Length: 54
Image 1 (cartoon, rainbow, N blue to C red):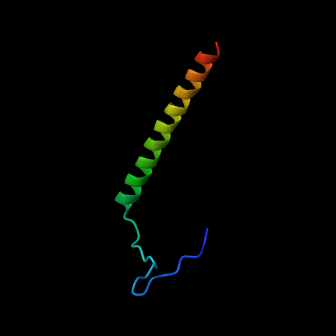
Image 2 (image 1 turned 90 degrees about the vertical axis):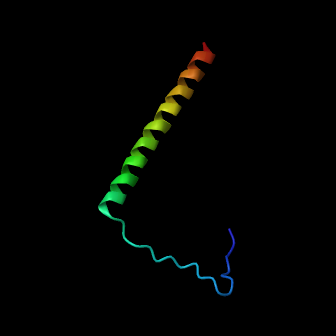
């Protein structure tokens, strides 16, 4: 990966605001739900592989 030069007049520095407790909880719940979804997809793929090998 190469070096990215900042164009004139554009600043790549990010000064984000701290998250509120509500935002933190929403993000946490989203991550948990996504992990469960990915886990169920992986289980389905595994079942499919096992069924094909029989």
